[in-house]
Length: 94
Length: 485
Image 1 (cartoon, rainbow over the protein chains, first blue to last red):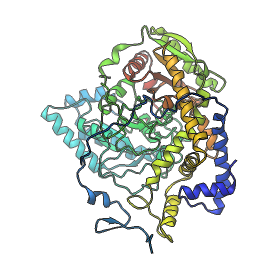
Image 2: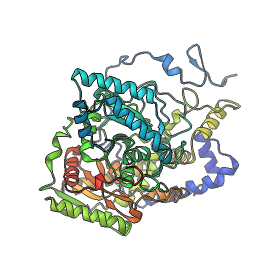
Image 3: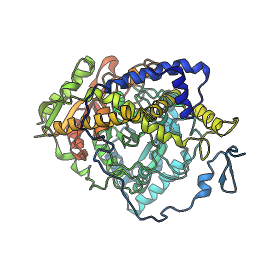
Image 4: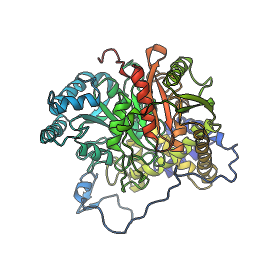
């Protein structure tokens, strides 16, 4: 069972602000999902390799060269705040 | 005309009895007339659609038409289409104009298909009822108080109500097959890696797969012929020879062995759904198929496994929505961290937040082995069940959903109950197999029931041929919801 503090810690890790009024419902819902997920715990998976791709295919490699055209302006047109081709964010270093 | 098959539309276009512009106008008019009742479309851009239709007419006049040239196709609103708003059903992307085309969108454009609009969906494809969309729920054309299923509910409702002759969807845990079942249309989720995920907004990358939604298996085959194919820009797209699905439709079911998983026919399955499913299996036998009981002993673990793997991958994929490069940014904040947290709190809806947080938890230090690795190990056991089953049969058949479409709001407040309803579709995603739902009758309140047909890896041609044989012998796929005829 996740405690209220754990729920708020997960929210901080996920960078999602949780209002005090939302915390109780969230705690109940997340614990409900984890209870469902907890059915996995009893399964003996000794010697079973984890599966991440249906055909166990690895990542394809390609030659390290530029293949995309430069469309910086088109991509930055969608950004909330841009200046001189740079994305603007609140100051992080004083 | 709006109920014509893709093949019939192609004949009409080729014979110049109708132009692509007239066809586009006819569907735009139906959307205009009916969409308020269904909320199936998020974005319609008549001018852009008609420009594509005019180009298609020129192509037809030049004599180099392809099977889909001039045919209107609606795209689920998570396929990026250059110049089109692509919202993913989220406030986060409510005003985002895609600067490039998804591979699937490119393929349809290369065929000369006409983009009819972008369809509503559960936010970031997370949901089974289409009620998590920022743009409001979609309604089921068979009963506008019922859900259409999800997450590709807008595409399903659009096809069922003939607001579009065909649409695209994506299926991470059943999001093509379950809405197809709920709305009485045909929908195919291809083998993982068959259709490129490039330009398809990511939810759970080891499970996501795009596929076609249409009235019939024949239409699905024509659409899959356009969609499938290798694309190096999706690192998990497989470079495998692609069948000619439309040409293989005549294969039939004679001599095929159909596996019936004993775990699919239990008390979890509502009686009103079981009856049409069993009748459909009898029909397949009449057409020359044999049946054999098979077992998928680990399938009851599929939903728990899915709710580790899908949220884990979602939490990673959705980390990109940070209010910096695109999408929503909170208007007020104290510092960078506060900007991230407020942006994501405002931009995402409740279901998306729940899944991101579950994913964050199961991937966090000290829990990764117990949750994520354990889920991936059981995932292999589930996939092995299918490998063993397919040693005894060519196709697997069963229900796509445990009930017919339920009322709007009925399951909204109990996420776990809604998750458990995906018990017949999720195992196929975990295994990476192709699956489809085709209409096979009606259950409670006169609502449609879908038969799920699952194939072995890369066996879409055989599935489509079997479904086509069934649809040649039955007329469930031609039934029309009242008020949308």
